[in-house]
Image 1: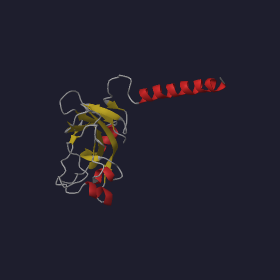
Image 2: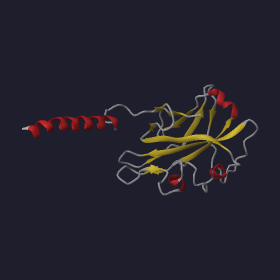
Image 3: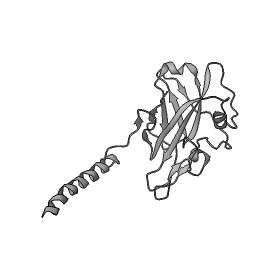
Image 4: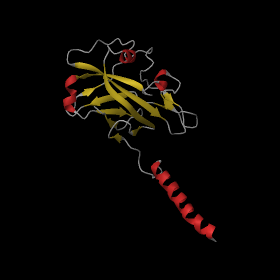
Length: 192
């Protein structure tokens, strides 16, 4: 009888833990999050989930940053401009493959918009829209975990922007991600 009395609180605690885990994993039936208040937030744009791994200015004189800018044919930033990278990770939690977004922009508080600069196909860190495999395979993510971007210190592919340096006075900046199939963009507040 004593063992049964001891097991009851343990069973209740296990049931409570299972219920809390289900809620924490999104089992609430709530609509997907389409706005993140900071980098690291998981947001949904269309059927895929996006996470900004990091964003920061890039210095072409820095060895690491020069590799991110590899093969760039766009002219150097003019006086009062700078390179700015946003690294993304994309995940597919559905049973079908989906193409990742191809339309992004950074918007500041004045409404100024910045679109990404094209990087060449030879740049291994450049973000490109690709078909992200379904969740019934191992690692349904972009970048591929075996790629340079997937094994690097940031674990994301990079969108490159040319921003005016006075943009810091117009914070917060938001990255907008337009779903490939159309609809309202999702957004993430960038940490700068």
